[in-house]
Length: 415
Image (tube, rainbow, N blue to C red; front, side, top):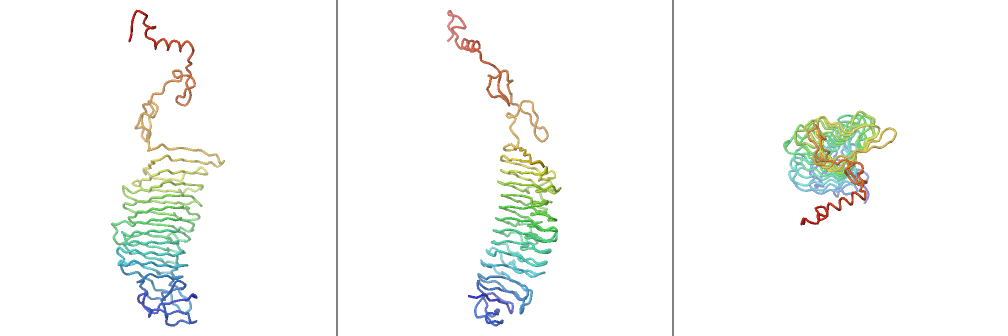
């Protein structure tokens, strides 16, 4: 089947054949069938309600010959739908391509599209849903003050498999923006498996949020270059959580995580990960400005290069519940390692007697280490070996001490 271009000619349901025209005959005329997987579909400045599963090649609302820019596709009921778009979803400037309305209460919408992006000041997907939204594909920040996904409603669960790619040139350019205005007491749950390539100039960002949110990200985050702000920005004056597993690395000089707010109980939890920082910038890979935010580290390996330190935290608590390796590489490529203890501070019985330790010297060691001259020669003790020699005379004396008859005399029985 050859590719056709479809245009809507009135507001209405996708399933209503009467709202469609296509150019299959060489010019636009009434369609004899609904759009299918080989077709490019334009809203043509009308509202099209998606009321069935759809499969097309492209979904667009820009302009070409015979088609007017504008219009929107909407899911406006509580049924489950799958939206398959083989090539791309592309939004024209200053508008939105796809809206999931507040009538999506507890349904499940699945969007399969390899590339979701837009033009100036556009948001490709506006999400007012409180159900489940599955997105399989790459989300882009766009040229100016734009992005691919804007989440307005608390309580929604978004499962994203794919990458977040930034290319914006403005500090309001974000691939994903979570700024809820409805159900604000309920957190947005955003689960992502994929990479964030924070590669924009002029302040582009991967994910920004000022709302209650539970983020879970598995993949690689490449902290931005040029004038990028951060891959993930959290400025929520409330409770939020963020779990990350994978690789954090700098590809320039800007931040992977920039956290400016949070209430007690908020945390960034980095697990089973490697952090690589090779920039000489004054910016940090992880930048936390709020003292209520807890930074948790579990099985994390750090690789610091060029004499820089990748974490800046203002009075933030840092916990680590598994051995963490800190690797420093200086400008001469010399490598130095520091290993954190398991489960925080060591027990007092494992620290040398009289040694004070802890953040405020609140602990004192109780472990007694014998002097080396009291330990048999070559037996390990402390960071050396014992020096006491077992001479034949000493061995004979010890043997005598173990024979009470010989020690006490034959006239006394000591049993």
